[in-house]
Length: 139
Image 1: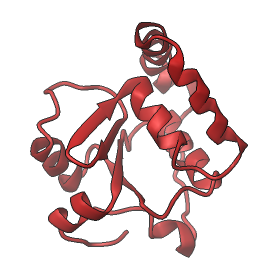
Image 2 (image 1 turned 45 degrees about the horizontal axis):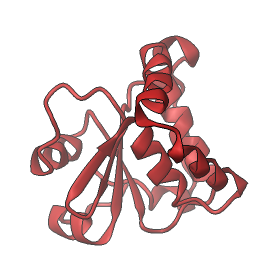
Image 3 (image 1 turned 180 degrees about the vertical axis):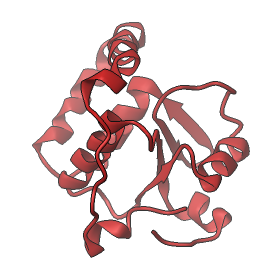
């Protein structure tokens, strides 16, 4: 994991805040890494001090239980965050972004069903990061 100033991170990178205690969420981060994401992406655990600081700086609504994508001065949650993250990948999975045209009420419903069951979907496993992957994590 890299140490970097919060101001520089917010200015230069797009940040994914994920539930670091969730096996499904960790597997999802691993999946994103396998899709050769843009160098502009950085991952931060929701439970970390940096995750808390970033949520506060972006004024993320209290109690948001979702993946959070920070870009520019805005934050995005649920299916919108997923589509924006997919845009940063470099494989065929990127083309799932065409589903962003589905009304948010439907795509967020699907997101919520998965999110409610995420702890049952995949048990937590510790991932060993390669040196190349470590640059994508901060905090």
